[in-house]
Length: 164
Image (cartoon, rainbow, N blue to C red; front, side):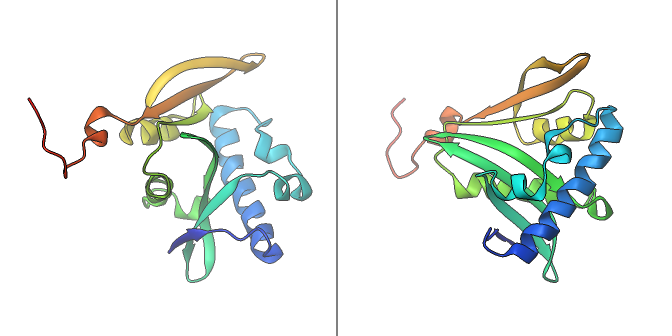
């Protein structure tokens, strides 16, 4: 089940905090960079991040989450984490789809990941994100930036006659 996460539920937030640390530790090992912001933040920092979270629950246990910020018609995906025991089950794809369903009228969605995080890059490309470039964020460490713009075909209103 997918639902928005209530940040007033301190027990759930603590479980989400642990889940994201476990997921980002796998990424850190994959990209050989351990200064990923979610690995450095405290629980207090996490609780004050100001992001909106959507969680993926199985039998009342959170096993994945995506967070984002919205600014007008622009959306930035800040975090995407799945518990390592549940990798390769389509959970990340479902969470991305849930964000898009929540904001069907977006102009653009932004996301980034470590340049060497091939599984994440494949996921974003599969979801029609376009690689916009790599930037160095720490000496010798690069992130890949992606964006997904609403396509003209997505803007077509099927209720209106189409003139050729």
